[in-house]
Image (cartoon, rainbow, N blue to C red; front, top):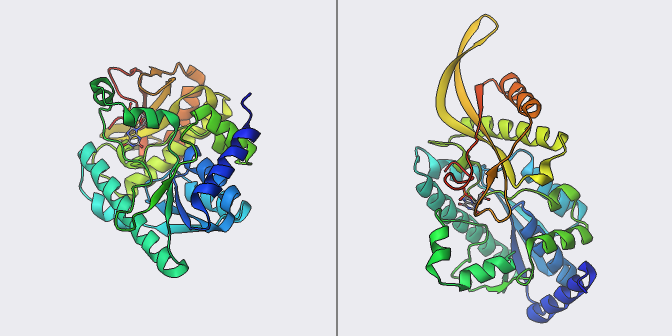
Length: 324
Ligand code: XMP
């Protein structure tokens, strides 16, 4: 009989046995997995845990504030926020190729994380463990070597939590035996806010792979504003949980529009929403024309740089969920 309470007790016991009185660091991504891993570990060993949150500048609106608020202020978990926005902007300047973006962001992330881990170790003493929110399906996938599963990963995925090499950290993976829906239940039982528990997945490279073409601060701000509107309207319509993912994509296309007496020449934004079970295949979501209308109106009215909106009606395959 599976209950969140039992699983939590068992996980806490295992973490204590594994970690003893050593110190642990955990990278928070803003997603549910790393959050639940951190909560479990904090429950087990308290302030022997330090969480690290890297602000890459590629995050959604309010994400950093939410992490600080929930983990730092509300749950009192030791938290270090690293402002690495400029580092990422510099490295991404003029980079257009999606795989190149992923490589740069992945390696820069590990570098920032390592720097911070070293700094922490110097300040507070040796760190022995790195926590990761690895789920059971990830464990299966990374141990199976059949070509089918490798062929499925069309895009190289970079997630939070590259292992700092010189520090020789051991891994703590308290979610290794759990599926996503179980992780959500445990998160809720541990007091993780509702909207966090049900959050759509967000790719490691963040908004950078939703800006087609080169990434800069101005385009990030446009996309952040657009993304916020899309999510707000979908939440207001009460269908957020039915969707696997929903977001805006900033294209490099500019088109002519008219605003009052003026001609505009501004950005085309695409709205993407999909339903999916496992993210390997996905269907475009049949959003109502009324909802699409509200999203479109708000995008062009509230974001000056946007004057045209299209809705993506391709399923996966042949399209992928992300545009890059
Ligand atoms: P695609 O676009 O391949 O996406 O259909 C499938 C799922 O993977 C996510 N995704 C990524 N996640 N790093 C990540 O951590 C990445 O580079 C990456 N690329 C795609 C995507 O958001 C969707 O959930």
